[in-house]
Image (cartoon, rainbow, N blue to C red):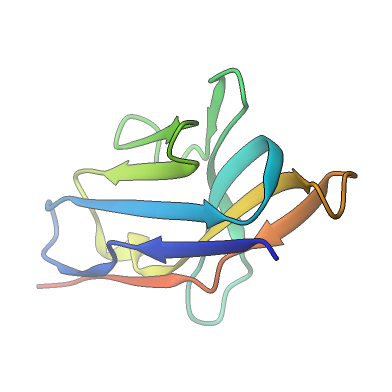
Length: 121
């Protein structure tokens, strides 16, 4: 019923930029917090950035000053602008959202399938 579809991943050289998008579809009543997580090979999934419905943001220390999360509530989309990318940013990036729908009014947490970001020279 609820789908989160990420796009915008790919290969980029160190110092480059990428913009990730995550579109949420379904019969949505409300979306609360939205966020981006990442998982590098051999590592646990970690929070990169999150944004509340009111626009308050939170970032992992490792990306502060380089990444910016934003959301377009009309388009039901969350974005992650990534600048000054480093090889350590290489990971699969996952979109996450707390969503309520007409069919399931209680808020549930949903994940996208991920998009790969590779930073290398």
